[in-house]
Length: 270
Image (tube, rainbow, N blue to C red):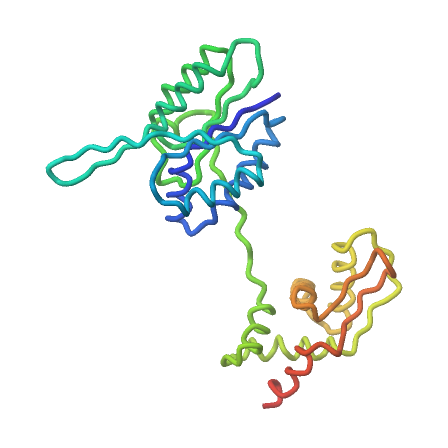
């Protein structure tokens, strides 16, 4: 099945700002969700022509990264007693696109609207007349019309939450000479204990497998929880204190010459 994803960009941007999300991260999730529905024949962003140039730099990046098509939508300006009122014409532009680009018996088979605006119900009915299946997606539960929420074909866009690695936080404190608490000192002791370990004789197909197997060995030798060992190793790799080379020598080496290791003894004993 081929699908077209039609994005009300300004609403997505507003939702991301309200929820503290990166637009690029949300667009990545939208793209992945689209691939799960089948082949994406078109990803189109309907963007109001507001004057903020920063918005268009961001849109240009999305256009390059995802191959997105851009439809610029006029903004209607009206002077009222209370000031200037602006209304974008995104819904009208989407309706025109549906009427002129969709045809019965021709792909795409599925039209996905990324918007919580109730006006899109009318637009979806036009697509249904042309034999298309319809879905609605939205980022923020609070901005979704109740009419759209009641649709059987509604799906929330759930952006994965990245869990902060506590070892990276601790090492960051060391590098910036910030105050350390007891949990930080415990993590630093784990890192110091890791200095003497050389992990060899593995057979891994990927770096992920190498890290997982090494974390198990660290967990066993240092009597740590497996998740602590995994996060410890990932933190050191990210900070270039460890090198993972499974494709070359099937070795995970902990490099004791790292400048981070040179800092730690004084921190722990001080």
